[in-house]
Length: 495
Image (cartoon, rainbow, N blue to C red):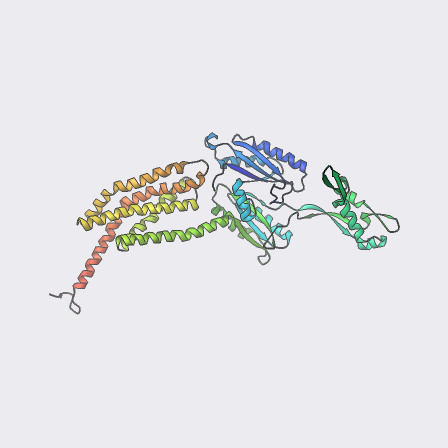
């Protein structure tokens, strides 16, 4: 991604936590974050966000963390190092689970996959108990995958609910119907609007309900009194069963299908490698009925697939267009094939440079390879065109033309490669905002130019002489065959 120079934290706390306790833990999060000198500020928001797009409860915190300019950081300290240290510090706060993103990317991922991480696994099905079981196994499996971080279920865990089952037979014995019980619970716990209060020009709704000490106490609710038709006072516990059960606080659907989402971020490994290992581990370790439940990958993985599909189309088209232009220039197939045949070898330098710098093959580096192909082909054309000119216009024999052509093209080839390498070196070494996109591209081109230049100056002339020698021999053989008269013996020729 483009480095935004900041962090965006998605923090979850135990479900059912009170607002006071959530505010206290948010304060602990802020104090822990400010312990690091690289952090400029931190702002937290508890519960539902301002635009209302995420129905978070008070057990969720979003935090914006601003960072000082990287130039002011301790030598050798990187953003990934800071994330690792922050993660270790947050783990010391009981009850906190923290995921790391960037502000703009977080919004993009939310719109793309409905989650706030680079990768997600969406588990579709109808039975929430089974969905929770599968999601738990997926989380346990992904936590063992190297490079998988911030692994968690995106939806909040089940919350305790008070379930009241009316015993209709018992209620009938007292002459109490189910509606009387429903009215008591609805009014006493949910509240009933009884009027309005006017303060100046403003009006406020007036609602009556039981105090919080009753609403949150199952024993107090069980002791609520109902009035029977005969005037008897009947406790609610006599006509209903009251128990605490666990239930989903949020039911998410996509395409009218229930689903749970397991989220994760790749860290210190490229996305494609983490994805491949994660898919293999889930296929091996997570068991479920594929007829009733489906696992679908999403997130940045979808962007990766689209980019790979485009590159799979663009690269062959680019090479094909190069071949047509070279064929129009040289007038034969062997010399364009020779120039393009050196291109794959030139990629070795780009791949080696990526490996040495700990980078991965991504969209940016793929664009760098396309640029490298262009420079490698240009140098090859300079070399072969000069050798062809020496043979055609000055009448040099093949070997002399190859030697003289290679010698005379040393300076143009070196100048072309040097100018390109020097121009891209600042981008290759940059560490400011936006450099994450530039570095892989520049690294591929600079590293690839080293091998491309050596191959153009050393290997290409040798291959040219080999191919043209065989071409001349084949041409001479065809000429002799054409001069032989049909039907005559091998020693007879036409006078």
